[in-house]
Length: 494
Image 1 (cartoon, one colour):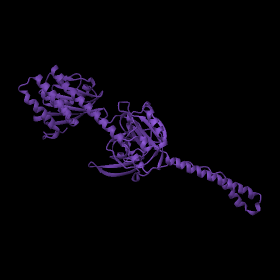
Image 2 (cartoon, one colour; image 1 turned 135 degrees about the horizontal axis):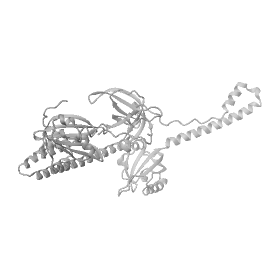
Image 3 (cartoon, helix red, strand yellow; image 1 turned 180 degrees about the horizontal axis):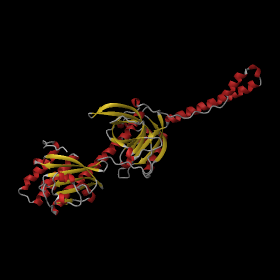
């Protein structure tokens, strides 16, 4: 396995340098207890600076090693959907430089590695001599000539995240004070990891919610408890002609509703304030040009805090009502025509000599009642190159799986892909190989908030993405699809 040489100072090590430099200044005059307290304070300040995750892990291990007067550290992260541990061991040089780094991948079998055993016990693990250890056999650390070792588990949100380790080349016993100090640093690290994960998940949910608002083919309006408009989505702006600055802060019914319906809408919104379940109602809405639209609204209370708000989601029924009326009128005219032709046939039958049998048969065929045609979709699917809605940048990793008619894909069939963009009609993502399937299921979101969509591949082209030859796959959405009740998609690798 290749071993890298000593690396030059870089931004990702400056945090370690500053931490250790402060400790070195105190080392001559401070006792071990004071040095440990100073280290805890220094690392607490370091976490507040919010460095990159890998840097933070290395900072924590390096700080423990420095205080315990060791020069080798190890950092491990759980990968492969919780089936492996990606571990790195390195020598801590002067000013916090990491050299002689070696990477290795463990399984989660607790008998074959100290890291897996530490995660299983969920507590600190120490050994004075790794070669004499009977609880586990870690051949990799033995190969790295590790003598004494201290390993700490990182359990974030009740799930194993990784481990921190510090190592001696010879035999070494760790005192209770050593272990307690190392645990204190690990707890500070775990708190920071939990905060980072929560912030990333919140940001992803906010981005996903914003993307849905931008691409959804419906009017979305949020209002406060008094009915004042807080926000409208792009579809609302596009079809009704209002810019947010023109209507935000104004009462919903004063700006958009017909005068005769204002009291009705006000009463509905007042009811929603005390009703946890969604309420549906229909009402007319005026666009900026004064044109009337018939809207089917669903409104729900979003929060019951001191600053509650309501969200209204509306579907424009104007086109449907117009088509229904046109169809009714066409059917009525055809019915009237059929009656006239029937009367004409009856009159001609009394004087058959004035008309040929062929013409009479044709008239009788016209006299049959005309059945109204079935409704067709108002909007046919459009190719990706002619999307009605603007494509939005969507730089997230999501999961897709081939779809076989009548069978929802199994969890293990889903693979993670890097998305490029998304619209109301479809989505684009990158794959290393051209897909062998035509239909697929796309999972958008994370955890319990995941939504599943049936889609079709409409375009595949080879492109260069991040320096690699990839295939850009363009898909169109065919509609939502519901997974089986016992279906559970594995969490994405951390």
